[in-house]
Length: 226
Image (cartoon, rainbow, N blue to C red; front, side):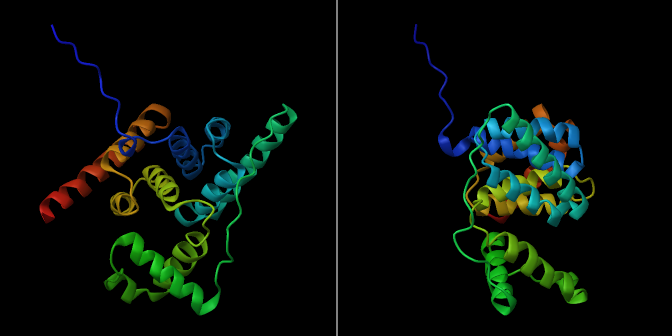
């Protein structure tokens, strides 16, 4: 009788402990669930997030859930770090950006280039013609000021973004778009399915449902394009 052993998923199909830890931090921050964010931050720091990683995720939060929730989440991170210090835990500070973020026209150019790389093509449309200010803000603030900070890699930023958007009912189209962007920066469908399972296990079943459905829609679009 021949027995077969279960084959471990390939590394490209799995998220690391650190990557999995990003998901609840981002989701609870976006939801404004400070009590559960506290626990997620402690777990994330134990799982390998540096102080810099956590700060970057919660600063990026402003672009998706607004300044109030970003500020509240950062204040909670400060409390968590102080409490851990009092317990004798020395968390790794992490890295600072390796280069200065450009300013003015150079920032707009850098943000436009980052947006194109992430999306796979230049982003245009009637909405941006109708409200050119929001187009400029996306390019300068989000894809410029935030994505030019290279002390958090783009895969981590996209895991955080997907988790944040999963916590925001009504953002399904943006959630689907970021499933596509996540795959553009090298995350696999298997890793994104694992992200949805982390949402189900550690965050909320509704968040997980929104993420699963967004991923399914994106994969169907990919299949239809072939």
